Length: 324
Image (tube, rainbow, N blue to C red; front, side):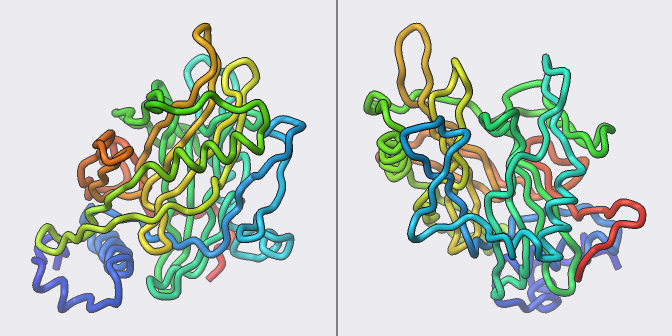
């Protein structure tokens, strides 16, 4: 029986789970088994967060300092079998940008996350960038007990971008939705990196994001997302971007929306701008100081049918050792 024919009531009887995240994972797993293409809502949970905090010198792209309440993945984390696999799996992908001879490759593992409630046991979030610059894409892969590994990509580059796997075409968005806009009434970027971090955190705190989560239309619930306290990635680009930070909005502990804030320089001087990108297939709405500034509709589909945000089960390479 194709799960495409199962309605809301039958699905609740078929998959009585503790959380929407669990339901989304099982729904996709069964759909893959039955041959029905369905969507995937992001089921991530942040267990440890890695802000790249900086002193005055050198630039944000090369220097970091740990915060008391946030830490980068430890050496033991990075040696863990699942994390080694996750980093290797994401490392099979690269991001080809128009006008660049070489693709952007996996830059840093920014987060290690897990969530026992949604049965997400382990996963990582990482960025693809050129030489410590702005992410051109954000990738993540996670494992849930009893289910397969799932990988997802949010495209930050704004045109002519393609994801490659082992150097071969894998997926190309047909719509580009990440656009940078000047932050209204923002302060002039400070001269010191530590002060700019404070400014970016203050700007991020003026944003709010609502997630309309729910697999079935009749079960959609409105959630006010929580801003994680530190950027998970800091970046800079010589002559273009003075400083930048990638912030995450979360549903409980699951990242659902990316917020990039950066100080940039042009002929008019230096100022702050921002962009938002989804980390979910559900409808998102963002406000800045209570003014609506961005939104994206609910998108319940995966794989080749994705147009803006990629989500699908990870297919191991031949002979690849996939941990349980």
